[in-house]
Amino acid sequence: MTASALPRAGLSIALLATGLLATLAAAPAAANARPEVEAAAREVREEVVQWRRHFHRHPELSNREVETAATIAGHLRDMGLAPRTGIGGHGVVAIIEGARPGPKVALRADIDALPVTERTGLPFASRATTEFNGQATGVMHACGHDAHTGILLGVARALVDMRESLPGQVMLVFQPAEEGPPPGEEGGAKLMLEEGLFDGFKPDAMFGLHVFSTLNADTIGVRSGPLMAASDRFTIKVKGRQTHGSRPWGGIDPIVAAADLVSTAQTVISRRADIAKQPAVLTFGVVRGGIRYNIIPDEVELTGTIRTFDEGMREKIFADLINVAEHVSAAHGATADAQVPDQDGYPVTVNDPALTARMRASLEAVAPGKVVEPPLVTGAEDFSFYAREVPAMFFFVGATPPGQDPLAAPSNHSPEFMLDEAALDLGLRAMLQVTLDYLHGEEA
Image (tube, rainbow, N blue to C red; front, side, top):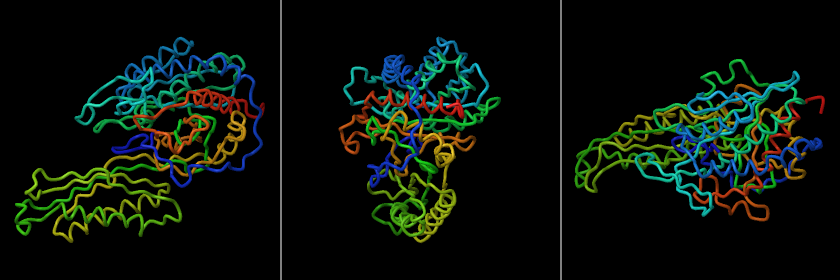
């Protein structure tokens, strides 16, 4: 989920702490729960659990999802589908053709894992290891993408079984690299679109979901308009002149300049951004400089992330941070090379208001009285790229067992992140109900 974290990445997710216990939002009258949804859920429930556990045991990092993609494609072929593979790296796409004319819908699941060493103690816990950024680490589905993949396979099985009564077409999108491709590589939703995901099949609507520890597993969260933040990474190199630590006047100290820069940069949000309009975050995550206690180095490198919900604020924060970097450095006699942003980030994830208003009733049908409006989420998601192309809705499914305080549960991206598998059933029924209600439209 994918919130994105450095160096962007999919979900270093943190729901805003002040609003995590969201109140029930006023909702339209619930649509009727479809009996075929309940029947399908009963039929595929155990299979979805087993699929999810398999992917959890065998996670793969972004742009390395070779076996994951092969397993998904194999299951789709077993269902009688003809999946396309290799789109956007290891993406897998398949089309379900209904027997009657109707709308086109796309459904997305992300399939990559994180460089996290699992500490859940589950019998199907990951034992995978790898090297990431020069360090040995475990690999874990610490954000729930294994659940998303299992759910979408279950939805696929159910829709294939009801093809004879199905209007329209459904595109299944199993997407790699939501957590962000490795440095120097491309990947994720943006690359899938660039490689022609929607060529010949432009959806009328697209849906996605994400499991979250900050909601209980009987609860769904959905919000119209901006939902998850834009995520941008920046790098600032503060350049001084090296000298002996005993003679600071013999050089220019980039460490002191960088420290002042980090402190002053906080005023970009606290004094320059209109946070009464939308929240924003500016965080420094990496400070790198120096090699020895008595040497003032030539350079300090700062890396961080910016989170915003408004495009105008996003651009203004970029400009203000560059201004601070250059002028604070100059005040110390240093210079700054400010790359803000230093790569393409993720845009704001925006739920189409008309689509969300229409489909909220479908979510209420499978979770009566348990559909809430979450606060804005400062994590990011590259589902945002799809939502720029077609009307889209992204929703959350709780992962923490009912009765437990979701605020006290290990969060997404934690080595102790634990999914209540009841979320698989709720996610499956929610995605099926939304899909069928949209496809049947006025028939419903």
